[in-house]
Length: 307
Ligand SMILES: NC(=O)C1=CN([C@@H]2O[C@H](COP(=O)(O)OP(=O)(O)OC[C@H]3O[C@@H](n4cnc5c(N)ncnc54)[C@H](O)[C@@H]3O)[C@@H](O)[C@H]2O)C=CC1
Ligand SMILES: O=C(O)C(=O)Cc1ccc(O)cc1
Image 1 (tube, rainbow, N blue to C red):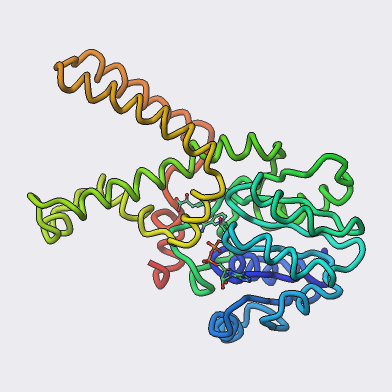
Image 2: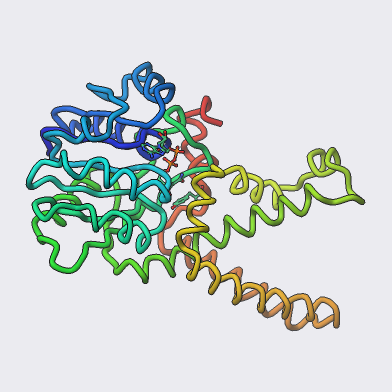
């Protein structure tokens, strides 16, 4: 599909891409680049690419497709570094969890002779680093593309075809809408998880060992999300600030209302809410979406070493 693909960043997402690109034969050559020499050496041990360099500009030379898979706060620095070395006609994309900020950081550096088409695969786990990836990560998952106005339709279609070959379904959206939707369905849940696990960790009346010993599955589900990469999630919070604050304020209002219902013994209100929310999960299942995180579903059997 592409003669040469350059992967900048080779963590969970970059290494999953490397694996599926190899499995599906989507590139003549895979060039792997990452900032730290240690991570690059590990990628080489795992044979994730054909060539390896810590110099991102070196990596993108002659690449037809460049995929930037670094924490969103680093995307501007990467764009600045690779810009002068990009081949005319190359497609440059990213996988960042926020889109408006990544575009604001990267777009100004993009030369007019490349196709810059940001993207976001809605697929991941709480793990990070090159060992955590797996080729099946993107199967049956959405990948949202946010092509800028004036993007060449052929280039967008080429990138969409690439993601389809990785197993994903494609949607396109404008970046602001993406950031609002993702603030609700991904960023808020992670923030709630970080908060609840932090609260449990701070408790004086219940000891840490009791939290660990008696953690029921409800709490455990939160600990999985709250084990996600701190750098990545710090950057998401800093780079989708407005949408996250909007969702957090709605969340806080609704939580206050729930708190009031509990305080005043308003069982009808509690029952009505819990009935409504139960239907949401049914709708997700009926829509054919997986409801369990990939680690807890079919990938547990296939990848016991990653759990
Ligand atoms: N982890 C997840 O579940 C998902 C993450 N994403 C997004 O994908 C991106 C990558 O996330 P992961 O692969 O999970 O992170 P990761 O922590 O596993 O890997 C990040 C990689 O970027 C490299 N890196 C960091 N700063 C760099 C720089 N300045 N220059 C070059 N390389 C640099 C690191 O060495 C590492 O190889 C993030 O933007 C994240 O928001 C998107 C979907 C899911
Ligand atoms: O591990 C989970 O449950 C996730 O939600 C993974 C995830 C994290 C960040 C994204 O931008 C997309 C997917």
